[in-house]
Length: 192
Image 1 (spheres, rainbow, N blue to C red):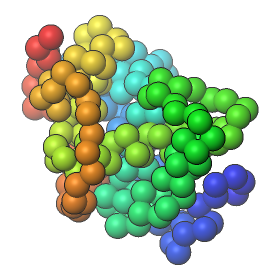
Image 2: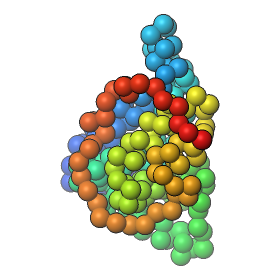
Image 3: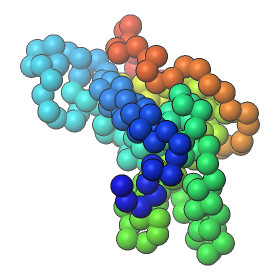
């Protein structure tokens, strides 16, 4: 393991399995067009609409998995101080990265770990202030979009806010990603 390795954690194997299971549940989710096409053609190895959850930015994909490390295990990168230390160090260097800068890969430190650092720190305050169920709802709504990349509409619907301001609050466990249903009861179009 390289870089900001998981080997620095007590039970890195459980952490890694939780992280990857979160990916499996999240990225397999799809909306009505994907379910219809999967029913006709099977599991075609294309992103949209077969696996529409894969169309969200890497910051969201890795961020939700990092968030689930803490949420399901009670430990992980969000429980430690490394991610916050990276962000504080960047601020001390005069660099305040926006969410869109946290999405991309960069040769500048923290490099490829940027999506894990910023992603986890993005979802945790939302779960703390608005509840874990709103994070799950956001991911469902993003996957069910009939027009790809309309994440703002999914965020407004899930978090009931036109602005994604975050504040820190108390952390809670329960409602792990492994408890998500594999498909929704019915397809709904989010209000825009």
